[in-house]
Length: 111
Length: 114
Image (tube, rainbow over all chains, first blue to last red; front, side, top):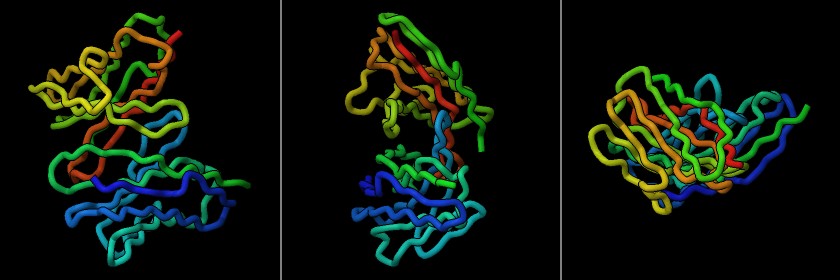
């Protein structure tokens, strides 16, 4: 399983765009990049996943360069409710492989 | 995606006792996972539970301390045995969705050992 590295914490203000970068140098060919969001007193929630280039959904965008050794989660115009911990995970597509969580990035959005 | 219900949501237990946490999924799922999240920390995988076979434990976790049952494809329990204050954590169950790479989590059980 590829190890991931992301900033421990970030601060932002309401209305700003937030970009959280994750490095995964040892990513394998059949690995996907997934991001989860966790609010206090809740289980993690799946946000987005991608394999390469750009993926966008109603919550976020995920940018993956050609070498796939890093990825960037982009949250447009954050609000106070986006304050959470964000986890980047690399997951093999083959079978029901376990998810291993890194330390995550604690995002604080200020008024 | 299958919805997970986990209970209890929280409990306070005496040291030396045990707590059993239940996880119910509203549709059949092949594999379920149990995690521990200590205060302010990330999630640590305890074990993977397959129906009809023994759970597979991660390094540092043993069956005597964390026995797991998986009697059918919609239900699993995790017991935390011989409780000590160090077991105070949030315990979460999870299952993988149809798309393999996406997982769904219960709300967690906040355990406090006194």
